[in-house]
Image (cartoon, rainbow, N blue to C red):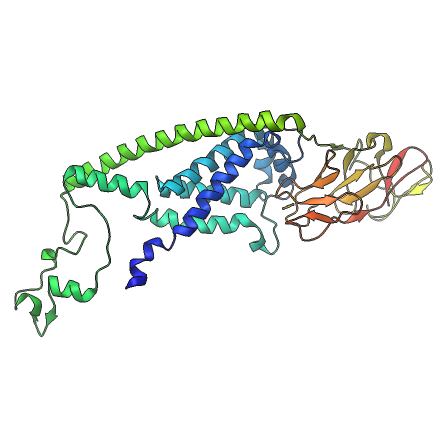
Length: 387
Ligand code: FES
């Protein structure tokens, strides 16, 4: 009985976590000018580009990349609105549905190839939202419940609060069918319609007109509350974004990665398969021609396509004449990493993993392993070859 009475509090910690996390995620994006800076390796654009290759909605993502910044703003504000809605218990089912849709779209873009699948957070968030889509925030610490109670008071009907009551008490009040008669009603018929503790069509608490009136007033009050909270959220988001721009704008990192000219277009000129190394007489080395070494200046990186697999590769020149190359596929969920010259690390824009340039090792997860090294050499003709 006690457990039943506490059931309405059971989802409260999850509600706090989801709401708090989404508010934090929205504010974090708004406060970070690099999230909206298309040149940054950790921007929404870099994230869309990095995940487009592996996403099951690749075609759609490819078209959306040009709208990356507006999409980023919508995502950040949506997270803020969803988080506040769930924390306050305001239009909770709508907010939870928004949270589930957002988590599902993130699952399809940046987390689809997480392996095992439960290591990607977005699928967990998706299922965590579903109880609130089904049941809302309940009656505890909920603006929805307060609005419903106030509306009921105004139209003169009891507040629609559910309370636990032992079934024995229901039998005592409403009747107890025993040996063909209603024992608690002294042999009168057991009529459910007379029972004050039953709700539903058998014992309506209010007429249809009253119920319509309650619904209308509840929607009006809820809409007013949503407008007030939404306006406050927009102001808060604007202040946070402007503060972030003022504080962080001066040290915006730029993506030091560009496509290697001719990258991916050059494949071995002969042999049974594209995996076969090709002799390059001019360069004096064997390997697949990637492009001109001058296209990878010191302190910069360039991308190319690995001929044998079609996967993205990345080559960087950390010191003069030294070229280090890796398979750019992030071992976490398969997004392509970029080079963050300001910190001299490779960064995965999907979930923020960082890798050491000198050996590809993981500096920050969630990537479970480092990048796979490749061997790139510079030929005497000034070109880079993948061996
Ligand atoms: Fe998740 Fe790279 S794909 S960190």
